[in-house]
Length: 134
Length: 499
Image (cartoon, rainbow over all chains, first blue to last red):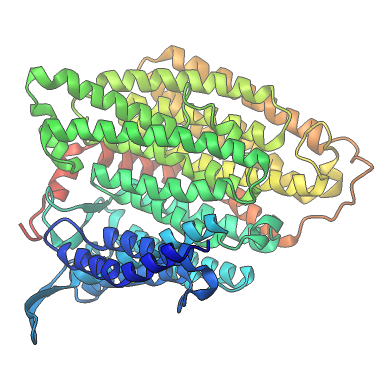
């Protein structure tokens, strides 16, 4: 599609949309949100770029299908980590970390699992939508 | 051992991840799949060694205590199902390795899908949570949708759409049933439900009955009991033979397994009306399924109708809910999974050899490949239940359990359906295997690996006949364990895990 208006809007929207996806992701640990919606949001953002500028001009460092594999692997490995530590599958643990300027955070292994979910959802959505676009 | 009880689910998942990540040629994907399956079966044998004495392995995912977290439970029944799934999958992949199907060669994502199918099967067999069962059903179904339509011919898409719509409705009903139960009791753990369902006040009994019948319908639809079986003969013959064999061999049994598991835990004390319905459905399926088979002339479609009939025997045996009934049905299940899978593989090879799936155009397979014909003969006789095959013992056990319980009508139908099964097998034999080969075919006898993979299954079925006594003892012990709801509840609620 060749519409200067859409191209412009897509370009402006890209950073806030991705930031919002990141916000959803981190919020999801204790509140509604999480890897699933963040993945959908990210995929939607990227699809908007594709639609606005055409596939050739979007820089894609990885194939969407690969994301599914990486995401599944990350989620599975998080669970298996617990097994290796002698605990049942998916037992989560957490600690507290201090990040300068941003303050106090709670970091848990459940977030890693969520990151896996994020990658899978983003990968699947992109794969399906790009297949339809073709 | 309990901490490793999750492995039958994780192993196929990890294999699927590796297969997705590395891509590569179908050959490499196949090698990885087969090696992974060998590892899985070896591990399941180790698990089997620790549950044969009657102990129950309970894995608390996330280390949460029973009614709060999800538990995975491996008992004798679960290990039988896990091993059956592993063995059939191995035979199917070896068959495909020996004679690669052109469709699978062209679309190598068959292999990751196959692993996800295994994951869904194994998960459904070991989960101790009703909602988790639903989730594994979905894993199984979503990969099935992909496998049924692999190749995307018009016929497959038509059957696939039907299969998908039916299963979506089924899933919605499943969710509805589970939701009602959750609303009544506030729990989804099967052991916890087993304790809470009998204590429901009389005002809630009607609603609980609704949930029970809904779940029965869902599982009966998955297991292809009449009148919910009409999707099966359309769907199963359309994909490549290896996929048909997997569905016909083991995927349909998930429904049977779920009925057995749920009716011996959740509804253990209130199952009487459900059991009556189950037996009635079983009797109808036995007869109508085989009558449908007699009328068919397409090889794998005929075999698909037989699935409906055979599932009827299982439902009849399980519906008795006596130790001998369940033990007979489990024996039947082991025998029939192996034999059915072998028959689908043989007919796949015969179709390839004769160049047609239609019995009217086939002929003289016995001339073209005597070995294939011999394998078919043994498997077919076994399915029909002639002595001294494993099929004879299975039918005998189910029928004698029926007589014990005074169900003479059902037993009569068992015998009538058995005779009709024999008749339809003779039809395949005379039309497909005897006579002169059609002049148009350019016969290339099946590769040795094809015969080896099917031969493995057939010899397994012969072993079952010779070793009927030990297996029957094991299935009897399994039936006793399955019917002992208190033992299951006790194992799940054993101390351990985070509160």
